[in-house]
Length: 487
Ligand code: GLN
Image (cartoon, rainbow, N blue to C red):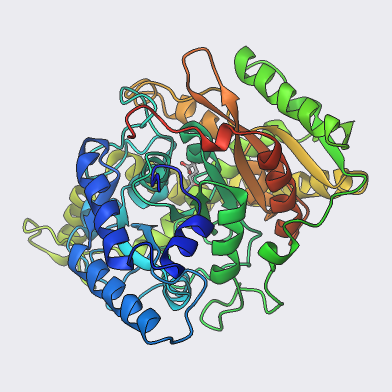
C-alpha cells in the first residue's frame, strides 16, 4: 500500500484483513515523519503513546472486540487541542511548558472512534496567521516547494497530510486556517458550521468564530472523521444539541438539479489569473456533471477582512488575558512586582503577531472606541451574514477560489501584516456567518503549486458540501497527486 496517498477506507480494510497491524502502520508513518523532519510539520511526536495505543487496538482486533470506525488509524492534532499528558503549546512560547491535564472533546471523540494520536502539529502562534511562520517553533515548509509556506494557521496539519506523514489531521478555522492551508497544500480541508464541533479543550482565539475541522486526502475521508468528531457537548455552551450530520451515509446521494452560486465579487482584481482559470475550469466540470451555474452577488464581501480584523482581535484580547504567568505556562524571571511580572511574562511569552492582535483588540474594545469599531463591526457582520442568506434562497452552494494566489515564498509577507491578512479574503466572511465550507484540490498552476476550490453551504449543510466535493473527486484526480518529496 502506498501510504503517501492511501484513503482511510483502504487503510481500514488493510487492517481488517490483517495485511498489517496497527503497530506496523504507526511505525511506517513514524518513519515517514522522521524522513520529512525538514518540513517542521510537528511540534510533538508521541512515539511510545502511539505504539502503545496501536498495540491495544491490535489486541482488541485479535480478540474480536467491536472496534470503532477509525480503529488503529493514526492521526495528528493541531497543537491548539489539549491532549492529556502531552505538550499543548498552541505554537507559543507562553505555553511551551504546558502539559495538558485533560483532552479536548474533539480529541476524545476521535480517540473513542479508535484513532491513534501520533503527535501534535505545528501552527501559527495561537492560530494567528496565514503562513505558519508565526510559530514559536520553526516555520512549517510546503511539501510541494520547500521554499514556500504551507499556509496557516494549521500549516503543520496541512503539510503533514499533503506529504503523507499521516492520513488525516485536525485543524481549526477562525478566518480560513483550515481551508487556506488545505488549498496551498493540495488537500481537502473542511470547516463545519459554527456549533457542530465542541470547542471544549480547543484553546480559544476568537470564540464566536473558532471551529474545529479536518484535513484529509478526500471528501470521503473527511466525512468519516467529521461524523466521529461532531455532536453535542454539554461542556461547550455554543455546541448544538442536534443530531450529527451523518455525512458518510449521505455521501453518494445524487445532487439532482444542483444550483451553484458564483459571486461576482470573487473574480476581481487581486485574484491571480491562473488561479481564476483553474477555478473556472472546475466550475465547468460541475456544469458538465449536471449543475447549473448562477451569477450571484455578495455585496459586502469587501468588508469581510476589516470586520474580521476588529472582531477577532477583540475576542483574542479577552481570551488571551488568562495567560499571565500565574496560572500556567511560561513565567518571566524578571518581574520585581506583580504588575511587572505580568508585563514581562506577556512581552516575552507572546510573539509579535499575537502582541499586535492584543493591542488592536484592546483598542477596539476600549471606552470611546467600542461603538466606533466593535459595535460597528458587529453590524457589518450581520450584513455579511444576510448576504449569504439571500444568495442561498436561489442556490444550493456557493463556489469560488479558496485563496487569491498559490503558496507564496517564505518571508514574502512577514513584514506586511495587511498583505498576510488578505490571504483570507474569500474565507473569513464564512466564519463571520458561521457557515460550513470546504477547500478541495482543483489543479496546479504553472509552477506545479496546488490550487483550491472553495465551496460554501448553508448553515448545517455539511453533508451537501461533502456530497458535492465527493462528486468532483470521483471525476477528477487532483486530490490523489502527491508532491515529489514523497516516495
Ligand atoms: N489568517 C487568519 C488570522 O490570522 C485566520 C486564522 C485562523 O483561521 N485561525 O486570523
